[in-house]
Each structure stands twice: as C-alpha cells, then as structure tokens.
Image 1 (cartoon, rainbow, N blue to C red):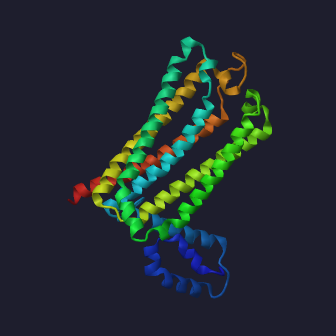
Image 2 (image 1 turned 60 degrees about the vertical axis):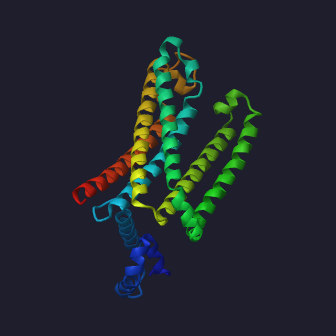
Image 3 (image 1 turned 30 degrees about the vertical axis):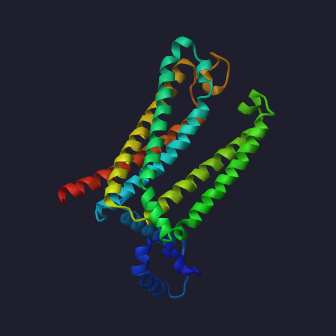
Length: 311
C-alpha cells in the first residue's frame, strides 16, 4: 500500500477531509489488507477528489450555493485570462515589425485587427485590476485575522519565481544588446534557447501568481454583494478574451493573405504559405482559455438563474 495513504486525502477539499477523512483511510486499509495500492486506484482516488473540489468550489454541479458558483466561475475566468496574457504576449512578439513586411495599401485591416487585440488586452487587464481592488477590503481583513499563514507558501513561491524571472530577463537583455538584429531573430541558436527558457519562466511565474490569487480568494470571507460585482467583472473579462482571440485570428489571416512571407522571416514574395508555429501555439492557448472563460461565465449565469428561481 501507499506508505503514506493519508497523502491521498490531499486531493479532496478540507471540509470533506474533516468529515470523511478518517473513515476513508480506515476503509482503504481494510480493503487493501496490507497489499500495495496500484497506480490506477490512486488515479481514481485523485479523480474523485478533484471532482469533490470542483463541486464544492461551484465549478460543476448544481448543489453549490449561488455565491460558490459565482466564485468558481470568476476564478475560472481569472485562470483563463492568465492564459490570454500568455497568448497575447506571444502575439505581440510574433507581430513585431509586421507593417514593414506589408505594402502600405494592404496593411490597414491588419493594423486595425492588431490594435483591437491590444485594446482588448488592456481592457481585460484593467477589469482584472478592478476585480482585485474590489476584493481589497476583504483581503485586508483576511490578513489582519491571521490569514497570511494560509497563503504564505503560495505567495512565497510566486515571489521567488518572479525574482528569478527578473534576474534572467536582465541577463537576456544584456545579451541581446551584444547581438545583431539577425542574431536576435533566430540567427543565434543559444540566444533563441535562452529566450524560450526565460519565456517559460515567465509563464511559470504568471501561473504561480494566478494560483496564489485563487488560493487566497477561496480562503477569504467575501460578501455576497462583492461576488455579484466580481461576476459582472468576470463576464467583462470573458468578453475581452473573446475580442482578443477574434482579433488575433483576423490579424493572422490578413497578414497571411497579403504578406505570408512575414511568418517565414524571408524576403517579400519568397513564400506563399502563412503557416506560423508560434502563432498556432498562441491562438491555441487563446482558444483553450476562451473555452475555460466561457465555462466560467456559464457558472456565473447558473448562479443568477438559481437566485431568480429561489429568490
């Protein structure tokens, strides 16, 4: 059996562990009778634990309260926006100097699409900031009541990753200043690998901050009125995500139609194939994030319908 079977309980929410944890472990011990626990039973236990977490958080099911559904939906939109930030940064990198590859008479639509994508990114980020400020009074009360001990680990990991990212970015910038433009854009393989590693570190730091925020919000006591406001803001963020995704696709299609060689990094009219691996990855991240945001909005709408049917 698992040497520390109690570790399997970590997959379940704290309320479930407090109510059923000891009984679950005793039942597990009896069923196994000292034999080992294989990977498939462990996977099933983990899946059951995650299912309980999703139900308790309001992400799935109809048993959770309206506030829990709003909270779960809003947190899903927050996680989705973190993915949008990654895709949006990738779009900005992929679109560098695109106007120079297009004739003046053909670049207007692509420029509008890119500008709309940038605007959607700014609006979505602003709404996330407003949502954070809306929760600020509750956060102050949470910290004052000793809540820091519950979130210290998550915040510390996010700070450490951010500090490492800052050092790595400074080193990469210093390196870039000693390279030519062609070397910075694929001519130096070592620099390219370093750039990808720093970008991956940025994704890790963003993910850790998002996880820390979600962990903090799920632990705090937040009023029902605040959750209603957060739900409305989350719907706005999801709308910005949809606009950003659509604009990124429109930009890619228009540049691919008029200047496909831009995506290959070759001279004008030397390529007619608008394939771009980075853009494919960026758009895939955006689409997945948009699906997550859409599910979050559906949970917020579910909370509203539940209140309407049971005023």
